Length: 462
Ligand code: FAD
Image (cartoon, rainbow, N blue to C red; front, side, top):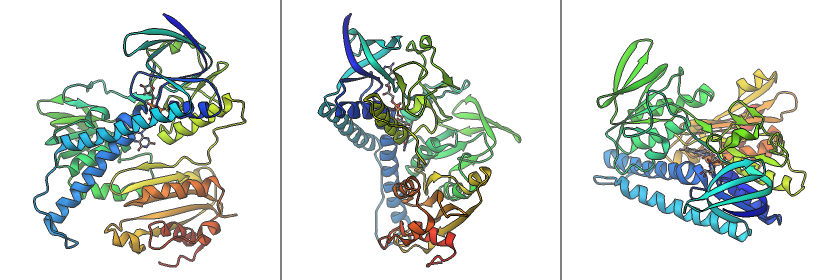
């Protein structure tokens, strides 16, 4: 076994790990990123990027089907069809392009990459088994754990054959005639919606009383209505109990039934990836099943750091990336901390949901007295020209000084408002700042200024 030493060893090349690698290199640190999978982690290979490619293809197909059926905007389309194998091949080309892009960025930063799996010997030493079977021991002054997360399995529905995780569903080459989605969180609904648009008969099974239970009901109601309009059946307060011949057994207070299910997609959550790599003998302080870190992403062990999904919620790529930057800066001696005012979150359903900061109920639960402004997209001209004017934009601000503490929206294309939402909250904007900013016309973004004006009591276009 060969030995090697480096200043910074980063275990995992997902959005957290590869960004830490780029930033470490930029800061002049000698760094190595190790990953047994292609660079980019869950996000790039089996998460954010492939799912959004599939969603986009499904949206395009759904528009073609709508045009063919009723020609609502005067465009005629004859007999649209979809070849899922070609969609997947297109998705794979995007992923490959991004894999190569990340490799190039790390090379430009002079950060090395090793393809292999790490096993911890101690807090500063790992054994790496290369994907080519080679082994080497690497010691480092600093170790960054960026091992991410993995899908949670249900005891009665182990992954395999008809039961798929989000990973396998992204590689289907044929649209299943019927699909049961177990778990009505964002991953299940995004993928379930895409497959419904591609022609699958989809049933969503959710144990809680409603879909997207962690989101405010006013934001999720338009999504629930749209699922219904698409023909997606949503069974709430219902649990999946096991497979039957060609179906899925489910149980609710009303009794047990079988749902048609050619395939079953289980998306009941993700858990931090901490097992099977010798991490347990480091004795790191944990926070539940996550590795506990301080504001600099430092763990309970000296010069051992952790970032991304392995450190807690929200398990999102942009949180991991920001922590990757912070950790590299902190290791280089800069006074960096991860202390965001808000981490925007998006649900890429139809319509989309975007949130940043506190919703009205959360603000009240924190004892804040707030004023709320809501602007309907049915009054936004751009939304009308896009043929999609369901939903609203909402501003939540402190009643005393009008500091914006939350911004949310539901509607077509509102994901792109996340930049403005994050910026406004991070910069401590007040309602007046947003209301007085000239927003280009005609854009969906004008609704943000209008929601601030609505909170101040003088929206212009409602
Ligand atoms: P990961 O991306 O999980 O990367 C960890 C890496 O560590 C992996 O490549 C793994 O191979 C490697 N690794 C693990 N153990 C070892 C070891 N022992 N040795 C070497 N390498 C190891 N987030 C968003 O922000 N927006 C979205 O739209 C979005 N959509 C998603 C859709 C789906 C279907 C899924 C599953 C996730 C989605 N996410 C989304 C979540 C996002 O993918 C994760 O939050 C993000 O990838 C976390 O980054 P990370 O660097 O912490 O971990």
